[in-house]
Amino acid sequence: MSLPGSSRSIRRQCQIRLHSGTRPSLSLHYSSNLRPRLVQDHLHPQQNQLLAARPPPSACFHTTTSNNDLYRTPRKSPALRRAANMRDARVSSPPRPADIGSESHITGDLTAHKKWLATGGMDNWADAVLNRDLKTEITWPVFEATGLHLLECAHGGPPTLAAIENNPRNLTPLEVFKIGKLILPHHKPFQHWVSSATALAKVRPAIYIQAASYLKELRAQHHKSHPAPPRDVPILQAVEALATGPVPDPRAMHLHARVLGHRQQYREAMALLDELLELIYPAQKLEPGFETGLYFPPIDSFWDTYIWVQGLMLDHRHKTKHTPEEIYRRAAEEFKQPEYLVRYAAHLREQGRWDQYEKYMHMAVMAGHRRATRRLACYYYLIAQGRYPRRGESATTDFRPVDPAQEGQGLLQEKNRSWWTRLRDEIWSEHRRPSLTHYRAMARELFELAAAYGSPESVVIAAVMAREEGRLADGELMIRSMLRANQFQSPEWTQVKVDVQSLLEKWGDLQFKFKIPEEYFVL
Picture 1 (cartoon, helix red, strand yellow):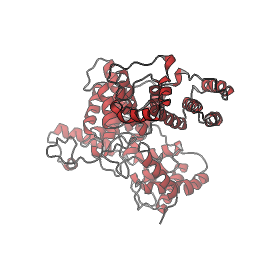
Picture 2 (tube, rainbow, N blue to C red):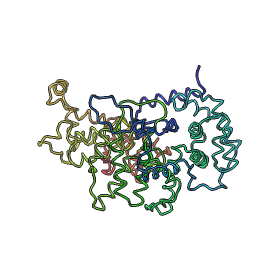
Picture 3 (cartoon, rainbow, N blue to C red):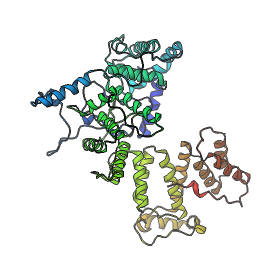
Picture 4 (tube, helix red, strand yellow):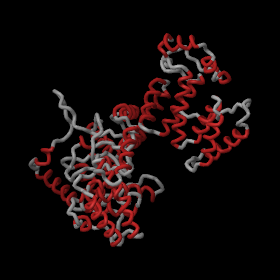
């Protein structure tokens, strides 16, 4: 028996398998229950580096807290017990969203929204069930009834606790939250209403979304500076309580560290992030179902937060436990974060460690990082031209870049070799280094992929390479298709169009050699 919309879901699943660094845009990444989750359940979801239970080694110093912490007797110190009771009271009181008023409700055509629920909502429900983001008990009638209830409540009045608790199918607040995130996912007012209402029901992801939105809007009001958030904001107080409670929630720890950073409490923020850094580790495989990430929109990446606070510490001449290079390396090497694979690769490039640069940039490309695709293509192209060393030549002292006027001569020499010479070089050449022709072929494939990602410079380079190889029609088709497309809107697009027009005027003249602008090549 197939689910409605399952064909689209199957295609989406195939895309996940082919590009492990990406996930469906509507896939959720939140905790599956209301109890505090242990840190094994929390990690950055964007790269599928989920936390799993570690195998029990014979001698393992385990830094995480135990489930038994939930049932321990109160501390014997009266002062500590009073402090704990005050903190628990802050958590038990539903936090009012900081920026929602009693008059707030969404506007629009309720009939149109209900019509969308019957079509797009069914597709999203089918995807969520197949991805195990929703329990199989949440059938389409349950999903539809809950969705209609949320739409009517959102159009009828402000977010309230009753709107969540009095749902028609007696679902838990977290289940209502999950369903709400799948309904009109790109309708910001409705999504804000859902997060506000479920935050009143103490749904943790909703609390974090509201707190992150508050910080983002506060920063926008101050022209992207870092104003200190007031200390009497209930939603931020709730985050602090969850971050410092008996079983701290890693998501709250991360978000509270950002609050401390905005308040210029850099030492406290750094200590909290260092504590969190010791608790997290990557999983060996992707776990199905809802993922509990250290961040999700609009919360920034944990690694971005760490680098930001660390930079503030260094600016104020405070000592830090780790150097920036160590954080870049750990985020790239251990957690395979695509953005930090690129950043760490750039650091290695500055040190002249070309083999390692290629390794980490290639990993970023395999994770679907768009800028890395173009950068690695440029690197391979320039290797083929003789500007940079081939793999295995980085550590040698005899490599010298060719003269700019002689770039590409090595390719011509390889092309004119006899079949016996080519065979001998492939089999018996020292270290069996890839040929320059091989690097050019890899560059061409990557430029074509970068062009599909929306890089106009990559389109031009791929077209020129096709022209140089005698495929004039293919190259011209690439350029004319680019000129008709609407996806190219980068700041460099205006200059690229000027370059392309001059190129097309002499495209059929085989004596004309187009010089690719140097600024097209980025590493």
